[in-house]
Structures are given as C-alpha cells and as structure tokens.
Image (cartoon, rainbow, N blue to C red; front, side):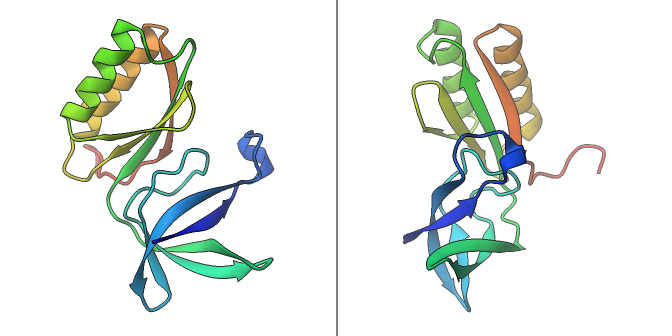
Amino acid sequence: MRKVRLRIPPEAGWQSEAEWVWVEDVGNGRFALRGVPYYYYGLSFDDIVRVELRDGLPEIVEVATRGGHSTYRLIAKGGFESEVARKILKALTDLGCDVERNTTSHLAIDVPPQTDVHAVYDLLEKGEQSGVFEFEEGHCGHSLRSE
C-alpha cells in the first residue's frame, strides 16, 4: 500500500490544498482506495482509480470503477464525547460502517455496499437535528430507492 494525493479544489472551502489517501495496487496502473477521504468529494473506499505523477507526486486523476461504498463527513460542534454522539457512532458501526477520526471534531464515515444507506442517513439526520454535529455527503455510491 502507498499514499497518493487528492487535490482539493479551492471552491470546496477547505483550508488544505490536498489530502493523502491510502491505495493498493490492483494492476494495470490502477489502484483501489483503502482509506476514506476526509475533504475530497466524489470518492469512496474501494473505488478503483488511475494515478499519474503530477509535479513529481502520485496523484489520483480519474475513477476507473466504483466500489459501491458511500462517504459521509461529520463535524462535531463540541467533540464526539456526548452521550448522543457516542450512541449514534455505535449505531453506525453496528450497521457495518467504518468510522475514521481525522481530528477531535471531524470524522469520515465509510458506508459499505451491503449497509442500508437510508438507515445511516436517518442516524446522521438525528445527530444533526440534536445539534451534536453537522454532516455532509462526500460521495454516494449506493443505489437509491428511487433508482
């Protein structure tokens, strides 16, 4: 495994210009994403990407195949130590989600293809409505009910 760069466009509103994510070589110049992007939109765990050297650094340049995962980001107003936050995070992991902590106030949630993304979304809305955190969708790789 190795890390590759994701350039974050200025319009995304994040302070960083790039983030680095873990990938695994799957052959033919393609790599499987093995981390959950915290700031970059449009990618999720297990997506297969193409990487090129840009400015001497390995950088993701396109998605070759989607892995079926979805990515959500949570930003806590006072950290994730409240009882409500702990219950929601436990419920997310009980559903099969992977929770990756970036800072004390930022989390990335990986929702695997077999997990009910609607149940996950309901939990995220509950946390937001309770005032514990705000959330946003980084990428939805699940089929939705209307599809």
